[in-house]
Length: 481
Ligand SMILES: [Zn+2]
Image (cartoon, rainbow, N blue to C red; front, side):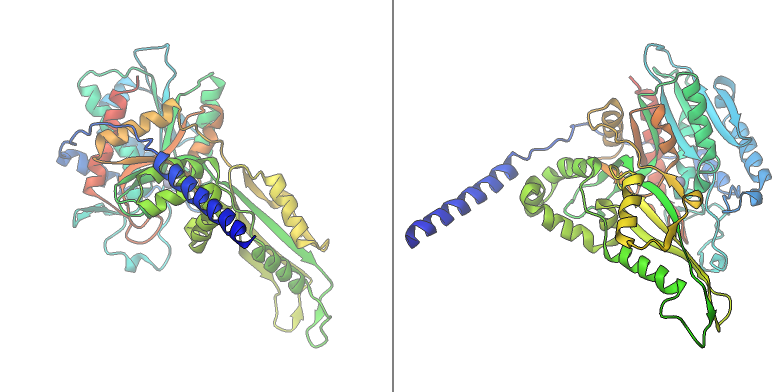
């Protein structure tokens, strides 16, 4: 009897190992093979144009009344002066005073257009941190093989690269195959009303684009665990954004005779409950794509894990959960960001209010998530004020077989040697979320290599990133077939 049980167990183990190995060896590469082309040296002129663009303090403050129109209008004049052919040959429209929309007529009206996006605005320099910067953030300094300054990474490199590439091609009298739009919003860091207006205008004109390209993933040399090759991380979806205000109202009074439970107690208990019960982990379609496209390129153990998610999924999730960025890839996250109650040390407050910020995984709609929040809190005294909420649902997901994905994958491989391309879920938000109704082919990707200091101190991109970025947009414009 024991022998028979042992035999069955052994047979099962053999079958299991066999299946795991079979899946691993069958997990073959999905990478398109593309010959890369060496990028030309960046001209001094192109470099100066980029550093000049950094001088404009096109800052998005939280408070819209602080917007400095002279900086934005100055930036527009700078673009007109620096890119004369673009302004002669393309049709330009200004939306909401500052957002720019250009249209470059293509040769073939049968083909749907493409849209290249970037934003003009930058985040402010956090007060008190100016001194920590190695350089003046708006001076446009080139030093140690890097271009330094606020807006280098986010997102003037894309805007200037697009303009440079177009001006260069116009000098050759080049006309693209497809019509190309450039959409440069002015307030991406403040919600993106400019991009929203551009998307609405294009939609009203019946434009359906086969590709919309906006900032997002990057070329990463070493940041993807298990990969020894550079990876082009191409965002095929982005998480949603939801801020909710929770409030509790309960008679306060003198702190010398406190009630058993106060508004602060009730509110903080609700927050602790929410934090202790994370949302279910899940591989959204973009993360599933990441596994399928990069798994076969990884070292054996990782390849085996990714080839057999039916078995190793809990283990993979366990690894992802350990780091904050990894955790954000696999689930809807929730964190309190503002908490307010009380005015005086000896008064028990009557009202306690907290804001929680959530980032919704594609597939997790806000209504389902809010319902789960209410279930978890399970306390009628905690009120969610929907009128004071802010919501942007998760984006749709671009197909890995789409023209958009394949085109960006091929161009990335053409401009940077030995790249593996992969879909990827973008954690942050971008202006392109407004283009869901204009295109089913939205890709969030900036062709730069491991930028540094995004939204922070000493923001900078390498000279090689700029060279690659210029080359990328030129190749893309040349090849919109
Ligand atoms: Zn940005």
